[in-house]
Image (cartoon, rainbow over all chains, first blue to last red; front, side, top):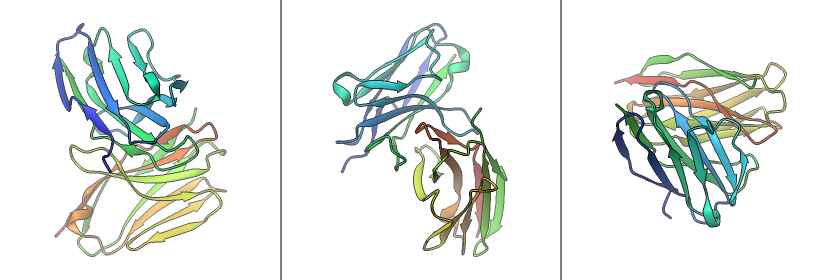
Amino acid sequence: EAGVVQSPRYKIIEKKQPVAFWCNPISGHNTLYWYLQNLGQGPELLIRYENEEAVDDSQLPKDRFSAERLKGVDSTLKIQPAELGDSAVYLCASSLDPNPNEQFFGPGTRLTVL
Amino acid sequence: GENVEQHPSTLSVQEGDSAVIKCTYSDSASNYFPWYKQELGKGPQLIIDIRSNVGEKKDQRIAVTLNKTAKHFSLHITETQPEDSAVYFCAAVTGGFKTIFGAGTRLFVKA
């Protein structure tokens, strides 16, 4: 069974440019998460989806970040415009349901903003 | 707000020795406590978890203990091997299904 797929794996952009990350969760997983991981830190939740509904986006900086999960399967996270402080790893994870359950993580996208 | 503290931040042990990582959480409604291992360039991978109605769980060389009264939980790795070297994260899932991660422990196992 394929795991969580993320692309691109690496992205280098200049500040003020837009960037988008894509995630395809494990087939059948209804819950999808986007996390931000700064160097030397644990993941921090940005947004959680149950099917196509964003049920927790309280930590998403909505002035520059947006996300969508059309049809309740794959998801896109966008930053526009990017700032230097956005340099980090963006992790996508999925689980069968939101009840406390194993989350499966993708390899992440490492973003560098110059 | 909700918080998970993890100690130590770095741990170096000799191959064959035991390693212990400790975490505390703030939200008393937390009911699920997973531990993840993250290797360089990869996403975190679940290695063991424990639910709030259980005090201890063991899986081969790894074990986790939970003290709900003190809001403490710990990871124990016995007979460490070089391939155990990685960053380990504890986490607590709150009543609102939000996962709060600790800052991580970098474990070095010296051969």
